[in-house]
Length: 251
Image (tube, rainbow, N blue to C red; front, side):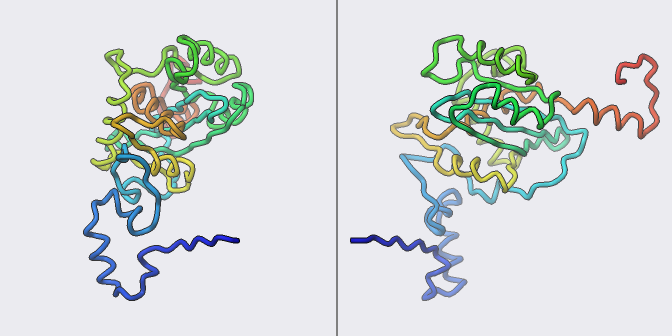
């Protein structure tokens, strides 16, 4: 006995006119439209980010050299380790997720080989204790291992300016940015959007399953104040405008 699953969207329901399909879709809340009209699954009692993908997805573009950037890590082993790069348009206060990767059972040395091409100068945010399965303080030891392999790890774990590390506060900061148009993600980052769609709560609690890129992004948003401009780009910009550098600080 064989089974066959047919995947259809509302666009395949040809007994509706285009106008009728549009009216049906518009009747759903924005964050439910992917699930109800396109069949994109949503799990649990509620999405953590009830935002339509089209509101945050953007086509990749060349980043202005003066935008500060920041990397962020979520440690893992059996579950994937994850990394993202954030770029910050400080004038409009818009954060862009421009790179994302995740991999299971890779040592810090192997991950560093993947991440160093993003820029050896790039500062990296990291979690206080990695995952709940690790012992308290494990995050510090792991951060030192990554640093030993050439990543520019921040001196302290991800936290808000007041020293707090609230998960909910981080999620609400991300959600506020998404809903106000101040958070964008390159549309080519398919693993990021995969996690975004399935990131949900059950019984009011965040379900920590395939949330690695979401966690890394949250750490980056918490430490956005540590983002910096590529020093090489900054030196190039100074030379192009003919500014003097009497102290040689940027040579």
